[in-house]
Image (cartoon, rainbow, N blue to C red; front, side, top):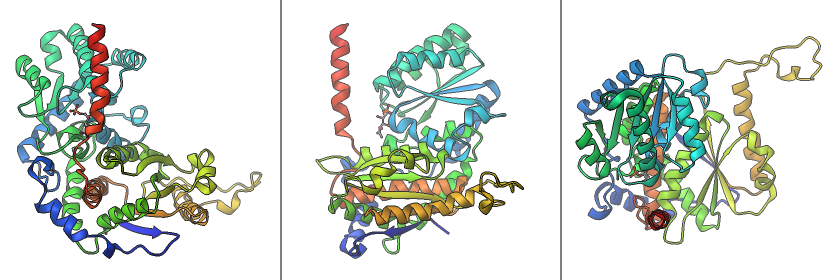
Length: 423
Ligand code: PA5
């Protein structure tokens, strides 16, 4: 069974036939203009050689180190963090026993954050995976310079070299030149795959493999997704794209992407990054924002229920989660909870989804429910492909290029200018 989409709309005039899905499908499959053709992920088959190299390097890091520092910004780190937390735990670093702790760096310029990471590094043996396709992004570049310095002081030049893996373009960029000069081990970001579509390339796969997740299963789910969601008709992935467009056209410009599983929070942040950076341009687009329920019902629940009617909700429901925790029976029933005794917490959590959707619907909030049949590596791979493809189709329906991010350049130029003027 694949991922399904259910609609809880207040107006009943959505019809997928009103959207030129087959034209968007053909454009994605065959007709992306050459300068916009960043569609390597659509038929992405990682070679056995590359996959074996990822596995070999991840084994080496697992044996050699207690701590892996992953340096990257935006699409170069969001996906790995998302998958590790979703499949292992949001508390992965506290719970891991046989796999290195993993910390993410290079996605901000905070000195406090950096100093704390360096303190953590002192607590064990360290490996570093720096990821930058362009090799020029300011945040990972500065973080890598500081970490290189730290590693060389601690392990010597050769020792540091043995503990650093760079994931970057095959030929271009400053990071590639540095790798060639120093001789770091490298993995390649495919030229025709942009950062935010790259989690199932060496960008995401190396850190994910280091955490002990089965990357073959993740890829198997994505490859099956490639078959399941690459048909123009009866396609839940295209339905999600068309529904987003329908709701945006109705003036719903905010999408509350919500989960009832805290371990999925960073996965939804990856979704947010993918959709916001791909689709928010040319003066249009939906602002995706992340919520974890029931936690956030106690903060933004009031607004959702009867605040300004600007939003719709997309609820990600994970079925068959691996949890047996039950509410115990209590003889005295002093907390009056025996009505729920002996029930699995995960069943109660899933039942609460229906209650929340009903309430929000009554508050005139349109809801899309995306149901994932099981929370495991296979289905997460499938979901990643689903979301990437749906995002691209949404962009084509919106007549924008879902693979560029011209708006991100403005802040980068300003920071560079300010820094250079100071120097
Ligand atoms: O999706 C994207 O292209 C961006 O989010 C990039 O991943 C991000 O800006 C980092 O770029 P780079 O890998 O070139 O350092």
